[in-house]
Image (cartoon, rainbow, N blue to C red; front, side, top):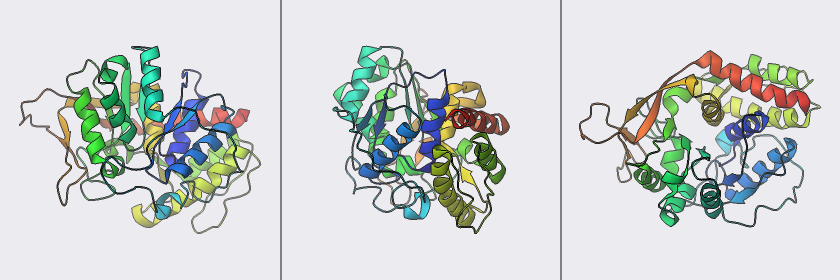
Length: 329
């Protein structure tokens, strides 16, 4: 994870579900600097009462490109949590590199572990280089990334996670090509259909025992007493401002939380198997996920791409799932 705002909701949804045995969270630079990703992730795990879950530090930059996440303040805030503040957190990260942790968990539980990636694929690319059998050891891999029949969100062609480290994405997808496990891609084609709007945010606050008035142009939606909701108020308000300015609606897309929801309930999306490659050299198209829908390459499909989503059920799963945690926190 590269914990910015939508990763935060993904973490809370995973922690809220009784169906998830959360083994670990690994961190990578992306939405913000690695140090901030670690701070945000450990703070959220503390708020969620899950300090038992290891949090491991991974790469602080892409494989071959310039450091990422230096200034994404216009989207997630300069520290990846919008206007939210956290207390100084002295919790140490796991005494193991994120890549080694991922390999160790897969080796310890062959055929049982589901990997969810919601940031750049740098850690995973390193993992498949160190352990080429990783695609055979995992049960599932679901990733938030790519734009397959739609435009990008960081360039006209590319989605942020893939664009941030396209070489890593290419390495990861090539490693899984031909493996028994075919990854599921939850890309912009479906995540741009799911919008968390003011009424949903107010419902989350109500579940937490707080009252928020989610309105554009305000410096505060209220002052929640619930510590998780206090974090979300600051984080989501910044994210909503960004979407209001650049996407024309006051609310947020839920890219990463949707990906966790799909892990919990695969029937939320319809997928189609297709051969996918990643463009790394194009001046205008670097980071583009190129899907061969017409089978021009005559290549075996290597990705199950989500092509449609049940929007209302997805929103209900997200709001209801996180509400459970808020009500008990």
